[in-house]
Image (cartoon, rainbow, N blue to C red):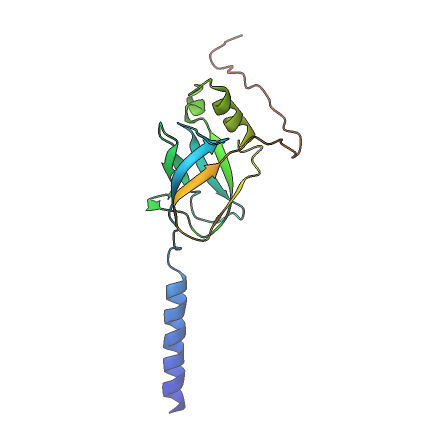
Length: 156
């Protein structure tokens, strides 16, 4: 009789471990990104996990009305956890600039990966979320901004 209970206990433990090893749950996060109440179009939004893990950081592109929906790899939504919100100009990766609008330039500077202190906690579904990027002073450590010079095109 004792052997039967041990076998059942071992089987239940194995099932519990297998259930815990699956993909994390994802909370939907969709809405509009704003700066001082006005929609900010054409920005890339990244939620960088505070604690590094093996899941890709959730990312979204805002449309012309500032609307976005976060995805994590192939999954819609954001795994549970706390994230630092990063805002970037998607054209910057190719040396371009999407907009010269002052609000746009402020947002991509103030909420860049180097300066952002805005946190997002994924703990529930949000389908009409306003990601508020309000004007506020940066109080973190001094940010060193080096100019990158392309030397491959200039043989001197």
